Amino acid sequence: MTTDWLSLWDSTAIANNALVTLNLLGALALGLLVGYERSYHGRAAGMRTYGLVCMASAALTVAALHPQFIQNDTATFLLGSDPTRVIQGIVTGIGFLGAGVIMREGLNISGLTTAASIWAASAIGIMVGLGFHLSAILFALFATFTMMWGSKLEDWLPSRKAISIVLHFMAGHEPHRGNLHQLLRDYGYQIAEGTLSIARQDGKIEWRFVAIATSHSKMADLNQLAQRLSQKEGIEEFQLSHARN
Image 1 (cartoon, rainbow, N blue to C red):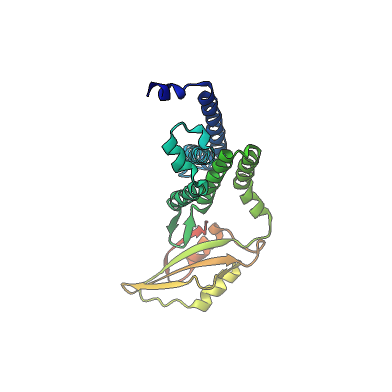
Image 2: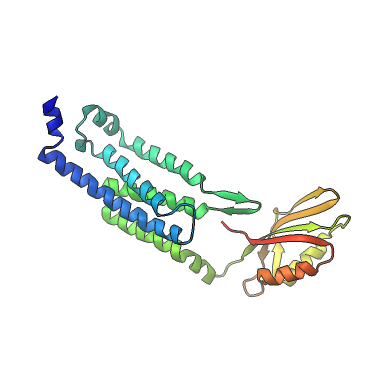
């Protein structure tokens, strides 16, 4: 028993543990790098989340693919028998974590980029655990660049912006869809097909839909559209927001 305990502190074991520790520190640093962008923009998942996800993924992968680092024979058998199952378990677990940051509010869906980047952080950790250190570093840099500058690239490229619109009409007022279509066209928008939903409560009608810009140059900003809707007869209340994803 004493011999087994002392074997944990021989030169080979210390070298193995040092190598694993360096892998964990590298994965932690790369996870913090990717998570900084989310933290900077005030997202729910920040540097700590990404660092822990990346480091934990690296730890499990190292343990599964390098059983010689483990001094316990039972652990070596359980983790080293089929390493792909460990990686599959990591990906599945991260899927549940990513789903927790996706939020839906009305017609808006937010958190998709955060969920995808958490998944990417896990993949970076797995790559570190596999020993692809240079590829993991480049992956982290590519992911960070995409999250920081991807939105700016989207703004620069031709695109059709979408806004979520909720209209509450006065009691007894029956809105005409054709008039609404014309109003939106005057400001560079059109109703996206399949997004219109209509509800009636206490004699009042509510419309919810997504409007898509017909062209980048003609579309009005939210303030201009809000001023026009406030002057529209029959509209009691309205809500405008960018259709985020």
